[in-house]
Amino acid sequence: MKIKPNMTLNRPDIGLGEYISVLKVLKSGKLAQGELVNLFESQFAKLHKSDYAVACNSGTSALYLILLGMNIGPDDEVLVPAFTFGATANAVLMTGARVVFVDVDLDSYNMSYEDTKNKMSKKVKAIIVVHLYGNPVNLNLFTDLASKSGVFLIQDAAQAHLAMWDGLSIAEYGDALAFSFYPTKNMTTIEGGMVLTNNSELANKISILRNQGMSSRYAYELPGLNLRMTEISAAVGISQLKRLVKWTTRRIKNATKLRSKIQLKSQRVHPSAKCVYHQFTIEVDPSHRELLRQHLKKLGIESDIYYPKSLAEYPVFGSHSECPNASSLSQSVVSIPVHHKITYSKINFLASAINSFINNKARIGNL
Image (cartoon, rainbow, N blue to C red; front, top):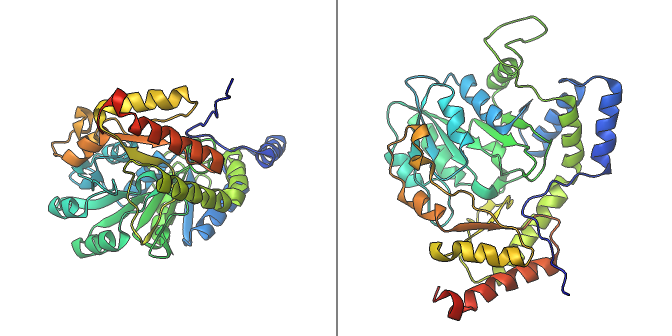
């Protein structure tokens, strides 16, 4: 009997280094934010060529802290792509500001530059671009638009560790970035987030906001929250960082090989972008999507849909924007395995599985 390859879509790579690091922290008894968090911040900032880093307990908290640090609140509007995870919109709403959804490009799946321009208004205080699936937006265009409009440019880089634009780290653009270290991301700290910025005042304010509004013990300066990262999470993160470059290189090689072999349209990557492939996402006729996923599942290949609806379609976000491209993509996209633990032989198997499905016209009709 042929053994199924068991190709998982997302799986954290936890090794001996993480186990040893966590045990050392537990034995030390120093569990809350301390020296390891400071070290993780400095290493992450250096790797991304950013001046300042502030660690926190999630990617959502990172976005929320950025918005608070920029004094965004009631009566303000923030432009957000309609095709992304809900955390991007939630962070805005929790400040009291209004979300204005922007449609996306049908090829890159990223925020539409033209629709962003069309939805600018005097109330807009920030643009949040999302590097969807690790694929950077055109940062030259959005940086220029934000500068000319006098608004902040925030990058939701939850899926974009080590991504680059035009030969530069994405952290060298805009006002601030938010990263996530959730277990499914390209690296993890179990749970966690990071703010990167080159603005010293913003970094200092965010570090105070995450720590109950204290600049030091009992030195309250602002109303704040406990959004700190633990020493345990930082220990895991430091260990993960040692392998992130290697992991990312393998993801890119896997994606390049897969793209060359499959017969379905996949997310377009701009020549100036270094996409880090948090997900490799393809498109299929909506009427065949579940059939394809069932076909892959029988062969031991996981898949998922990121995301099943445009955020503009959820009443909870209070949007009245029309984003037809986002709605269309939500009905056709499928994400398939591409992470660093997938071997080239499994990439070939995956490509063959997809192509065999496409070519079986007798069963599924003409794609």
